[in-house]
Each structure stands twice: as structure tokens, then as C-alpha cells.
Image (cartoon, rainbow over all chains, first blue to last red; front, top):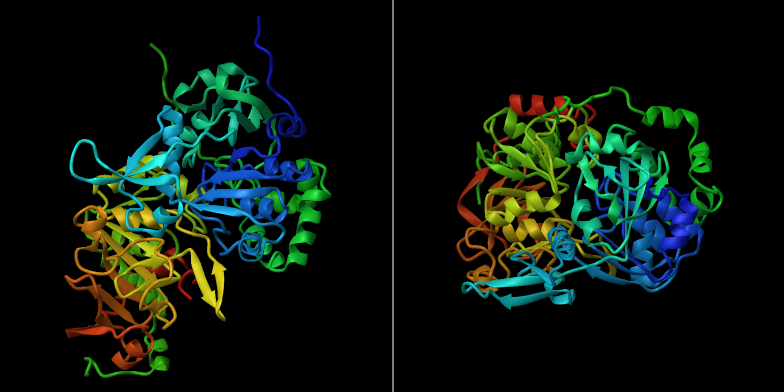
Length: 307
Length: 266
């Protein structure tokens, strides 16, 4: 008997698996493959009191904070990677607009270790990082302890288990077994640490494609609750082999969201009005989409899995 | 205080045939030794790494926080380390904990950082800024705290302004030498780690055994008085103060090949 397909629409995946109040891991692959389409659907469905977890997220966290979906951010860096600060993040922290948020500051390594501990099923992972820093003083999930095996001091980074991890991938089968290549960041640990995984795929393939190259399978389907086929769902972030980074979009966002009114207009145009990704892509326009497409393919050398 | 050669005006600096950023990149590239493992970062340090590879450090290896190990320049100018050209042709696309593990093992000799503020003991703040007496929330650590804690040498690049080089940072995002000699050891940070140079738009600062920064060289055309006036503490000056060596023709050629439109080197 064939296992039941986990394929569903973005709307259904978010409605069923990401209730208000969830701790959501987003942007685990750093500047690549950020699940913007999933974030926009959370905004459209009016999620509230989310805890956003991720190393950097580029501008997705900023958008969700500005839209009022977020009560807490646990991250190493919140802003706009190629343009600078995130204005919604600043308005929320400095002026409680649109609401007060709690910020739990991590470094990249301590966030990665929190997810590694979660993935390993242990309460913490040790590190020397953050010793002597104010991150250590202000983040209660970082605790100094004496090493049990020598005379050193260490930091215990408390394990984190997100309610749901949302990962964008190049290709997946209908059960959620997925290939990722390119920038991995904290994705491998992050989705193992999570209680549920939503896979957003550029392409849905037959299971035999996935099992033809099992070293590239970074998401085993048994962890996955939902599979969404959403081409261009990571725009404006890049997906290796699918499309490039839309640098201009990030700089335009920076300029357009400097004021609260500017952000509200941006949100209406790019999130509230488009019913989903196809409408969003229409707004982006054919010439811009064309310009972001792959100009020169670079296929990897084939690996022989024979015996 | 005399500096060899004699002080020159800023207009003459512009007339030298290189920009202040290009001078900073050349100085940063010389902080990289051949065969070293380097936590590269973006912007000027990225170019510094590539200049070093093409000149005096052909076997230096670059590490990026998103898990990338890279030995050759990307085919296109990068805006972020996750840009597709930085992945194509990489030696390895691994996980963040892989490259951060190298850092914690002590294998990474040099890491580059930028900062909103740095103080006399090399502590960095990238969490809170100040303008017109109002606190401004900045993006935060990213991997900076990890690099500052764990790299054998940390090199910091920033614009030399009195408000940015301050007596004491308001928030230690990334620790330098804390309050001075012995502080890092007391905190439990690894031996043989910590800031080694601050490369600014005016000069290069290094650190004494007491953990305090001093002026080691001034850039051509910059006076010591100008450096002191733009530093927020009473900066000590080396007895053997040097003039920063300007970028060579070879170094400039590499920078301009990699960044022909001066996106990062204006």
C-alpha cells in the first residue's frame, strides 16, 4: 500500500500546523532558502504571539515583527543583511510598535548548539563561546558551569525544541523526503530538533529521485508533517540551482520601510493583497523573474551508487 | 610627534591613487599568514582575504559561518555569504557547527569583524547604538561573539570616529580583553585568543601585553593629532610609530578586478 501523500497547499499547511503561540524555526539556511512564502501566509492568517527562532533570517523576521505576529525573537542577528538594520525590529524594541517584543540574543554558535542539543535529545551542549560577553549575562538559556572533566569553565547552552521548523528545499517527494544542496547553516540540526517539520519545495519528485542520491537527503520524510509545492517561495532569498538573490528587493525594502506608514504600504502591496505566491510573482513582473533565473547551469559530477 | 614621511592633507590622500577602503583592505590582507584558516566575513575582509590569497598567502583557506569552505574567489561580487556565486566552486558546503567547530578547536588563526563601537580593551558592541542620546537597537552578534571568543587573532575594521572608539562600550556583544590584563583567562576564554589589530580609516591599533590598544601606525597623510582627536580615550602611541604601508600596485589590481565598480571600496 502506498503511504498517504503529505502534499497540501501553503494555506492548509500553515492553518493546520502553525497555531498562534508556536515557536517557529525559520531561516535555518541563513541567507539562502528563507521560507518567505510561509512567513507571508502566517501574516495573512493573522498569527499572534509567535516565538521566532533562527540565526539571522534576513528580512523575514523584520516583516513578521512589523505585522504584529511576534511576541519573542530568539536569534543571533535581526536586520537586513545587505542593507543594514531592520526598521520594524527597531520600532518594536525601541518603541513597542506595533507591540512589545522580547528579544533573546544568541550568537550563531550558541543558537546552533541549542538546536544540536535538541536534535541529540540532551538538555544542553557545552561551549566556550559567550564567556565574558553581555549575551551570557542577559540570556537565561546560557549558563556557566565548571567542567566535570577538568578545571575549565564552560557555558551550557540549553536545548531548544521548536514546535515547527519550516525549511525550503530544492526537491522533495510527497512524503517529505527532501534533497537540499547549497547553504546548510543550522538546517540539519534544526529540523531534527523540531517537533514538526514543514517542507516547502521548488519541485516535487518521485521517491526514486530522492533515494538515487541518499547523501543529499537532509530531510527524512518521517519527520515531516506537510509538503508544500511552492516554486519561488524563497524569493527574494536565493535557492542554489533555481534562482539568484534579488539584491534590489532587499534595498528597496530597506528604503520603503524606514517609516511605519511605508512599512504598512509595503505589507499591503506584497503580503495582504496577493492571495499567494502566484499573485506575488505577478506583482514582481516577468522581466524581474527572468533576470533572477539561472543564467548558466552547473551540474555536479554524477556519483555512482552501484555495487 | 613626527611621523615619517611628513603629514599630508586628506586631498593628497585622495590623490595617492587609492581610496581609504583600499588602504584598509591592503592592511587587513597583511594580517593573514600563508596556510592560515581564516573566518572571512563580508565586505572589506572578504576582499582582504582574496588579496592575501593572490599575493602573500596563496594557501590560506576561507571559512564562512553558513558552513562554506572556500579557497578561490567567487565569479561575481557578493552581497552576502549565501549568494549563489559563493557556493558554486566552493570546496565544501557544510553546516555551521562544522566551521564553528574548527573555530572552537583553535584551528582558526584569524577572524575578521566589524563593529558599531569598540573600546580601549578591544571589546565590541554590535547590539546597541546611540544617536542623539537615544538608544538604537542594532542587529546583534551574528557570529561575531563566537569569533571574538574563539579565534586566535581577531582583526576589527571600522571607521575612526570618536563616538565609535570609546572608553568603554555600553554593551559587550563580543569580548576583547575585558578590563585588561588577565581578564580573558579569568573569564575562561581560550589561551592564545583575542583581538590583535584594529584597522581604522586613520591608522592601525594593536594591543599591548596589558590588553590595552595603542596606535601602531598612521595612514599616509594622517597626523597623530588627528587620530588622538578622533579617539574617545587617551590613546597611547607606539615609540616606534610607523606609517601604514600603502596598497601596492599588485594589491590594487586584485581589488579592482574583484570589485570593478568600487561597490565595497568607494
